[in-house]
Amino acid sequence: MIALGCDHGGYELMQEVKAYLDSKGLEYKDFGCSSTEAVDYPVYARKVGNAILEGTCDKGILICGTGIGISIAANKMPGIRAALCTDCFCAEATRLHNDANVLAMGGRVVGPGLAVKIVDTFLNTPFSGEERHARRIHLIEHPEE
Ligand code: RB5
Image 1 (tube, rainbow, N blue to C red):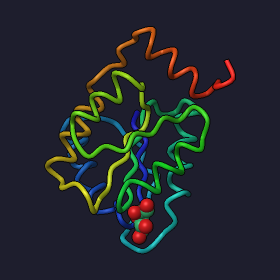
Image 2: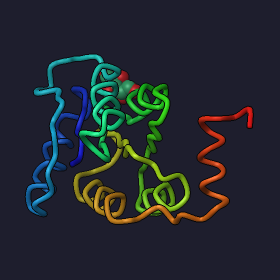
Image 3: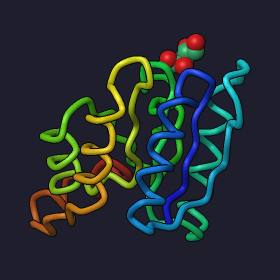
């Protein structure tokens, strides 16, 4: 189950992402927002982050105007690894290396065609499981070790 969240700057691109997920038969929970009316992106970052941390969703997609604010907000939550991606190389690498559990994108940055390719890459690339990457991910949450 994929958790979706956006602000007004990401609303239109999120509709494209939802249409893509629908076309693939992929299940999601939409945590809003629900229009292009201005809202505060940290609210939606937290809703998606909480769904992942509670275990009701295993991955998330967050979209704001740039993808920056909403990824910064999500990354304040321990256990959330949100990756702001503008291309498929980064989407693949962040799954392989960082085991990112949230994909962030900018609705004013990437077009819908590229965005759905990024989503597809992110959702279909497994974590490599390599020891050096697992160790580095552990150090993100436990920097004193
Ligand atoms: C909203 O105008 C905009 O600031 C927001 O969508 C995002 O780009 C923030 O990082």
